[in-house]
Length: 206
Image 1: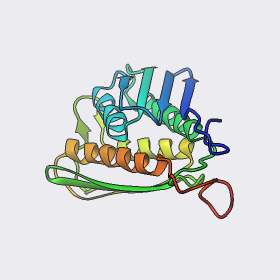
Image 2 (image 1 turned 90 degrees about the vertical axis):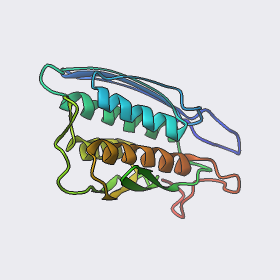
Image 3 (image 1 turned 45 degrees about the vertical axis):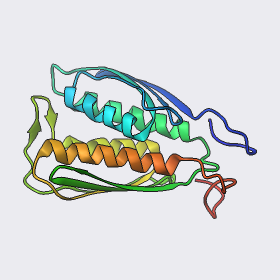
Image 4 (image 1 turned 30 degrees about the vertical axis):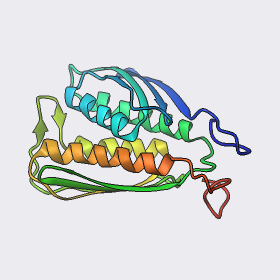
């Protein structure tokens, strides 16, 4: 596991390969990157959201997925999100010297997303969106998948995540605002705290 040990800076990178009968996924993440993103899942809007995550989180992110899109996009999106969460967990290491908590609010025209994250080691998701959203964005992205993406990511990353969209009309804006705010909150939580030593928990472990 990577992390910060003995006051020395170590690379904070994660790499996960996940292969099933439905999908083949490769995810690589560098928490100390500059927002370089290379994403290809075959689901255009999902690629767009992963680009937001890397760009606004300043994470270098590579995602390459081949899935059973002849069925639908569900397995491709789900398995990519699971691998993404596992890669983040690996990159965080033992979490020594990190800020641990992060929050961000991001508007996108008429929509607003508010995200708070705790790198707690305990998976928990609270998620709310405006009712009556359009069911699809483009031909492939079912808007009910946003919650499932977050559920899958949280389960593997082992973090506590609260995502709230108090208002918004356009489904594209509602979802994109969430990914931008998530990126900013993760960036804040995973940043090194120059005043901190050890794991940021009275338990001594996260």
